[in-house]
Image (cartoon, rainbow, N blue to C red; front, side, top):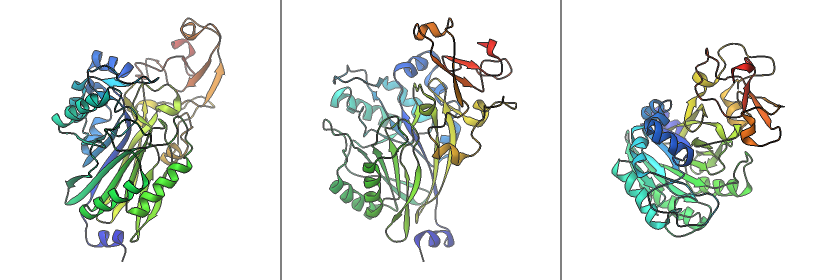
Length: 366
C-alpha cells in the first residue's frame, strides 16, 4: 500500500500549505506603504493567506535601515517595521535565501532575521539546519537555498549538501519542503539546471519544491520520489508583492498544497494579478464585468493561467498609439500601448490602472 493511499484510508492528518512568490516591500511599493499603510498591500490576499495552516513566501528584500553594502545594479531594502504587516497578512515562514538578502551586508541580514522573529515569522535559509513546524499533527520541515553564490550568511545550493540536508530533515519530519532561488529572470522556460536540482531533491526525499527568482510564473509538475511518493515542483511562483511592469511579471497567485503523512497529495492554484504593487484577486477585480469587445478575453481556466505564463491575462493585444500627454513622459517617440479590458471607467471600480494603457471599452476615459 502506498503512503498516499494509506494516508487516505487511515484518516491521516492534513495541513494546507499556501505558497507565494517574491515579496518586495521597497522602492515604489515602499512609497505606497508609507502613504497607505502596509496592511493595504494585503487587503485582497490576506484573508486567503490567514485561512491556510501555513503560509510561505520568499522575502525579496532586506528589512533594515542600514546602507547598502554591495555595488550591483538592483539593491532592495524596506523598513523593518513592515514585518508586522507580513505577520498580520498571515505569513508563518519566509525564505531569506536569495540574491538580495545580503544587499545591506551580514548586519542587514541579521536585522531582517530579527525583524521577522519579533513578529512571530520564522525565517528559513539563514540557518543550515532544517526548520521543523508542527501543524495538525504533522511535522513539516523547511529548507531554503540560493543557487547564486555570494557572501556567507545564507544557504547556497550544493548538491552534496542538499542530499544530506534532506536526509536529516526526512529523519525528523513527516513532510520535507524546499525553497530554491534559481533559474533565469523574466523567462517562463525552465532550465536544465532547475530540472536537474528538482530531480535530485525529489529522489533524495523532498515532498515539495518551491521555486523563486524568475519573477514570472513557470510550470508546476509532479516528480517521482522514493517509497511510492510524489514530489510537487513549482518551478517559479513569480512575484506576489512587487512593482512589476510587464504583464507576465504581474501574473501571480497563491499555490495551496495539501500535505499528509504521505507527502504532498494535491494542489490548487488561486490566481491573482499585481496592480501597482499589491496582488488583487483575478475574478473580483480584473475580469471585465460585461462581455468584452472582440479580441479581448480573460483566461478561461486556471490550468491555462499556470501553464501559459507568457499570456498577458486580460490584455491580449498591442497597438501602435500616437503620442499623447501621458505617453510623452515615457519618451518622445510613439510607444506600444497595451490594450486592456478594464480601465478607469466609473462602472468598473478600477482606481489606479497601469500606466501607458488605453481602454477598449471607453478610449476617452483616460
